[in-house]
Figure (cartoon, rainbow, N blue to C red):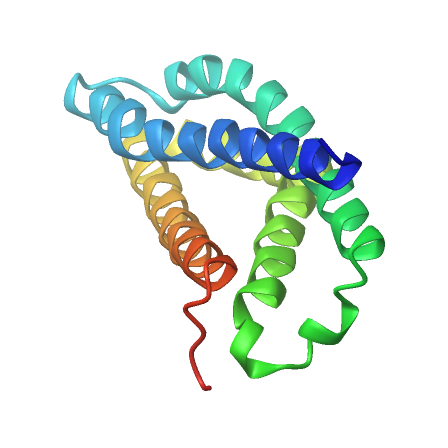
Length: 156
């Protein structure tokens, strides 16, 4: 197998672990915590372990994605509207990477914790809405990337 084949396999595994984890947190963990009258603190304690997984999987996805673009010389796809999903992958990756490595650790964690002290249930609902938006954007991108990489190109 060529090195790009290994990189693509690692890229897909990283996406499965990362976006699959986001789906589990969004569709299972958050609703379960809220339905049982759980607090934002409980949610944070449970999600903390996934955050570590998300950090290393987004790093893996970023590195393998860059390797694939460089080694297969795919730069010309980015300005082409038929390959919109290439830019979407980078945008989704950048949003999550910024959230996991910069925004959440530097200030969002403290702001949400302070807000949860005043109204834990409302803070959980806000976090759930943010997760749903990110999950929807991620799944749209995954559908576009899988379809596009198999020849289904929009705007042809």
